[in-house]
Amino acid sequence: MEEVQRHSVHTLVFRSLKRTHDFFVANQALLPEMDEKLEKMKFSIKARDSYGLVFDRTAKAKNVVVKRTESGRQELASHPAQDNVLAITADGENEQINAQTALIPVATSNSQNSSSNTVQILPKKAPTIPKPKWHAPWKLIRVISGHLGWVRCVAVEPGNEWFATGAADRVIKVWDLASGKLKLSLTGHVSTVRGLCVSPRHPYLFSCGEDRQVKCWDLEYNKVIRHYHGHLSAVYTMALHPTIDVLVTAGRDSTARVWDMRTKVNVHTLTGHTNTVASVVCQAANPQIITGSHDSTVRLWDLAAGKSMCTLTNHKKSVRSIVLHPSLYMFASASPDNIKQWRCPEGNFIQNLNGHNAIVNCMAVNPEGVLVSGGDNGTMFFWDWRTGYNFQRFQAAVQPGSMDSEAGIFSMTFDMSGSRLITTEADKTIKIYKEDDEASEESHPVNWRPEIIKRRKY
View 1 (cartoon, helix red, strand yellow):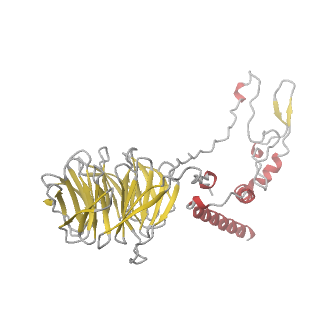
View 2 (cartoon, one colour):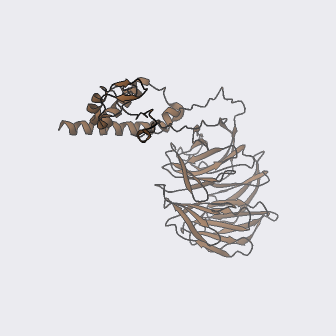
View 3 (cartoon, rainbow, N blue to C red):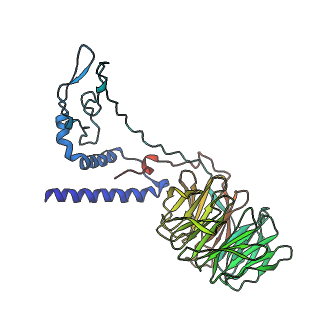
């Protein structure tokens, strides 16, 4: 009975330790200093639990005596094979047992008896965690208002002179990037505009919305010149292929459709998801199309065959955002459980970015390796892409006149230079951020604690 109680107490202790560790690892910037006494105590508890059964053997192993003979050999006066065990004392320290002979076999110096020579066991080197690169903190520089509903999408023009936003007021607005002034309003959708794309090779703007319509606007005439008919429900997201004239749209009918931009032909209908497809991205190399869905999966598609190459099922909740790294052959997917990084083309898992405990609606990454994620509760997290270090957290103030609950961030993008971040939010505003020029490594040091962040096996 006493043994059962001891086991249950240990189980509770380790569960509590694991939960506490996971809780604090999400808030790296505000972690307390390491308490060596507590670390030692924790290690001793773990050691006693893991190696309690062999403490009797270690007591016997302490009696091992090493005798050096005239010929230079090392002989063990008393060394039962089953008793050669590493001794761990109650305070958690590895005890050196008589010149370390209890654990490490010793090679004899007799050349004739070479068959008895054994290899010394070397300690395994602990994996090193790379230190994150320093990034300047970001600050809000401009708030643009003009839409009469939630601003759901944003796209920056390749020339970096203007950007377009679509909102629940059914209007697409074009803004000057430098001054933030309204240049143009485009009306035509009869429901919320959910996706925008600007073509880098043609004077075209593409839009999609909850009215099931996909439109191509000619920016020389500011008129719709093509409609792409086929979706059976609201269209939530769209992407342009970077090298060929192909448009990909996806939405609530659980499909992604590939369109020939010029002929309006539905080239492929990518089926396989079992729920709303919330995000789609295109790249020139395989996989050329990646989709994220509310069915909590990410799919990699073969564009030529129109079939799914791979399905990533690591997420536990709906995937609402996928973003490609501009230079590395990688992408990230966001879900309320965490943000995951993957390597193309097979979709190999790299690491988790933990701590953003909210519905993540959008992400953006710039060439410097700054990954930004925006939540449904108005929080913005800034991450170092390579290490997953969360160097800044932001909660923008809600626009006066809006409800406190209207704090969600629906979409975000960096401009072409990567120095401006544009977000569209539920308080009907567009916010522009930039790096703080006055910040330095001395004023905003990297609070890097690898000894805490490093996962331990409990």
